[in-house]
Length: 237
Image (tube, rainbow, N blue to C red):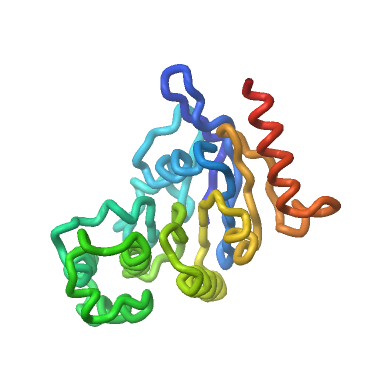
């Protein structure tokens, strides 16, 4: 469903991604785990066509994102919760997106209910939202078209503990319905609570990948993550 194949990305003398390869299967949640600056956001931008790789390929549903017919109806994305128009209300943001996709207005109400935004909150302009409310609105926007693949960059930022628990349940439900979910985060605990597989990245390189049990065998997942990212930092010096 989602495939990175030997993807590298360089900005002048800086290699943001270095031979990144991994796959996300249908019906699973894959956690894309790494410290800030590891290359996670760059990889997701390459995946959805916002950045061109220096080499390698990244595909969704078997094709480059730009070649999908009406990609927003097949792939849900949330890369930056602050990118929504600050002068529009939450309901307006979703209504305009629904109109673009040819969806009924009832789908907007379904999404507002799903992400837990009340009618009063939906009537407020996005510029007055907290980060957590913007994340919820962004998730609703990503799910409007009932996507087969979902790509989320740090979606738990700004969510309170109740919101994080809600997000975990939502992602598990989506995976069980057959969606392929790629979730990036720098928070180990957030990822290990929901992911079927984890891809660890540091300094632009995939350091390890596997199930949480496989990666944590013998030393625990947290220690494995610290050891791998520490080794990547030392190797870059």
